[in-house]
Image 1 (tube, one colour):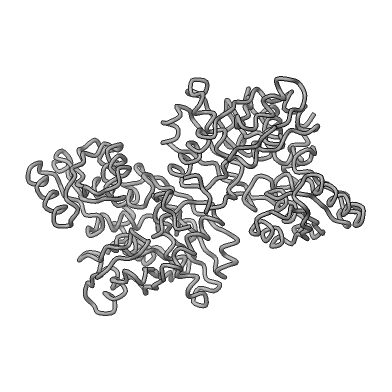
Image 2 (cartoon, chains in turn cyan, yellow):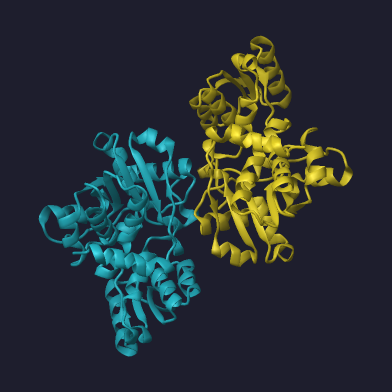
Length: 311
Length: 311
């Protein structure tokens, strides 16, 4: 049911995104024993795959909605993605950010033309502030992952990867709120040739792994992971998609994440966020499962604090 | 006189090197006011442009020479380039490395099949050890830059960049021993359209800048620069090439190098050696000179100690 929607989404957002390169590393193939194709969304506009879903959410609005602008609450990549997408189509973007957001992130959102409102750093406050803007301005609230337009947008990275490598056996993505992993699983289902999708998640925030076990959306009691992009829990839109289209989730330790991240930095000479390293860490953890397989991994983004690298 | 030699070199080494990508950054173009094309030799095999010159030097040997192997003394990228090139053609590589070389570099050379001999960490000892191997084994000594085969090999990065962007106004490379800058200047001369080559060098090791002023090879009294690849002085082969084919050299401060390096890390999401950042630092230092120009910059390599980044 999403096949045509994915293709339409890809056509719609193409003028607003980069077609990112696919990279390989002979050394990482030797280390892992697999044949890995990395889709480099760290080279995407604003530095992450979130640009795809953000652009699609903005472009799907009616003209009447566009005129009144969009609002979201985010301290991270989705804030930048919405601000930049709104700027591209010439509409206002109201971004609610927690008051403890790093100044550099606030500056980045403002640099893309976003109108920033700072709020106390609780989810309750974020939502209240955002809802107030919806009421006052009539702007449309965009969700960073729990919205089908966003899921479809994130799936376009896998579409491009499958266009270049049609015979992948396995696609892999990190699992946060389920936007990227859900979109990737849909793309693999409709456009792969018997290609399954495997998610990867830190043990420290294994809510999605537990959700698939229990059949209901689970939460995390603590979020002690370096993979800061994966601390969120699944949503009502993304969870059923993962249940239907995701093969499984592999969990990894913090040490495995840092080790995989360092290998990618050292051998591929590219900068990625810790969250991106989680699927490659999963390949290294379960080598026998992936031996000789042709694998596509979505490297989700590259916005890191260079002063706080774990090595 | 080098036009055909450059083309022959490129054909000869093609099976042994990666054709590295050319990257652009809208943000860095906005910051600099120029239109910059980065040739990413940080993605080259063994992580640096040295693979080009190393491969060419090895491939130019006679069969009799090849049978006895090659020797070089180096603590850095050229050691790895020679070891890997020799491995590819199936001949012995004897690598003399100073005893204070980082263990990771020794391991990398051994990983490429190089036979490592450690020596006391002085240039005199390095040369004596290397010469002894020449005498004992009959192996051929390869020089990291002061050898025309090496210069021609390094020039092939610029050939590839000009194939993709034929109308560059300016090519830029950092100046160390003159291998990369000399090869780049030759390529611009023979294959560019009125394309000049500008070198870039730290003030702290501005021997090449002074050599062009004085007309003789100058040395450095101190080598206090983060750009460790540029601490060497010119050689008798490279100096005349720079005199004839290089337009000029721009010098930059250590602060300017670190600033340019950080911009490339943050905006382009790629890992480069400090030496690579020197040409971009020169563009930022003399913005008015480069405004609106179409510029090609050779990013020379990406082998850094991630634990010792300057930010």
